[in-house]
View 1 (cartoon, one colour):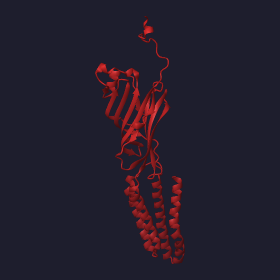
View 2 (tube, rainbow, N blue to C red; view 1 turned 90 degrees about the vertical axis):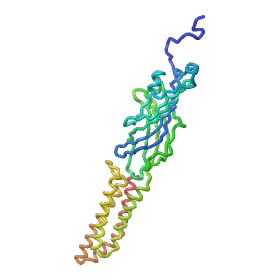
View 3 (cartoon, rainbow, N blue to C red; view 1 turned 30 degrees about the horizontal axis):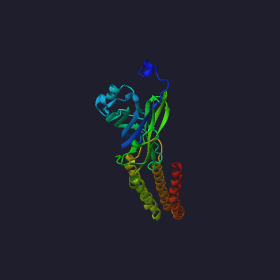
View 4 (cartoon, helix red, strand yellow; view 1 turned 120 degrees about the vertical axis):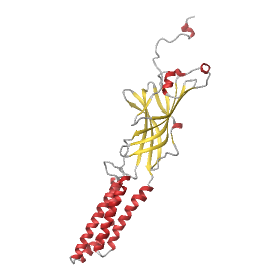
Amino acid sequence: MPAVLTGEAAPTAPRLLQEPIRVMVGFELDQITTVDQQAENFGVVGNIWMRWTDPALAFSPDECNCQFKVYRSVEEFVSAEGQRWPEFTLFNQQERRWTQNQIIVVRPDGTVTYYERFWTLLQAPDFNFRQYPFDTQDFYVRIDSLYPEEFYVYVPWEEKTTVGGQLGEEEWYITDYNANVTSIQINTQNSRYSFYFEAARHLTFYVLRILLPILIIILLTYVTFLLKDYGKRADVASANLLLFIAFNFTIAGDLPRLGYLTFLDSILVTTFVVTGITVAYNLYLKWLATERQKEIAEKIDRVMVWLYPATYIGALILIALFFP
């Protein structure tokens, strides 16, 4: 009987149609090691998980006297099983990816589970610090398939898409995270897995170490309007201006050095300008009192007592509108 009829004949032509292999992809965020605001990148320690079923990798447990095969590197897997596996790259990777652990498990039915624990720096071009320090930032880990979708198609692995409980980043806390798969056009149509998380800043430091001292300086400057001795007023206002300049130098190292103005920058600039104008105003009143025009000085002062806080309120409204 011909081998064709018995089903023992080997195929001599390639299959015309073949479904792409579905690859489940997941990312576990374990640590955020650094967030560089000026360089627009961040460091992560994370785990990449993949699972797919390829009939070509199926085997009989009797052949190896084992229930599954274990490989501890991609090189070892490729050497034993061949070149066919859903190779990938981290699209926004900036530095070398330091792999701590890597393991590949192959089961008899051809189901493969890939696990890798790594550390690297990732680019974050979506950073926008205009609302600093009340900003929230978007972080992405993008995993691109090197093979077209006619061979491998990514799908999210929900159980392996998680965020660790101790991220090791004291300045930021995560407010949201999710994962999705899209198609990207390189030379061909390829799958992209994107792990996204949103993070906001802990505000205690900024409130107690920056915003509260600024408020105290503003109030101390306003107190000078209660003094009737214009000479002392000018001295106190000048001392407040010097205090603010010294304070600005003190916190300069904690502020991001960016090419655009942030919310906190606007607060600092407004405080500096208004404090400087207040010094000049008090010196002018001192001159009026010296020229025996104290009545004119008092009339102007009655207006400025209300104009000073109104100026700050108006400036805050404008800043809030400019940095929504």
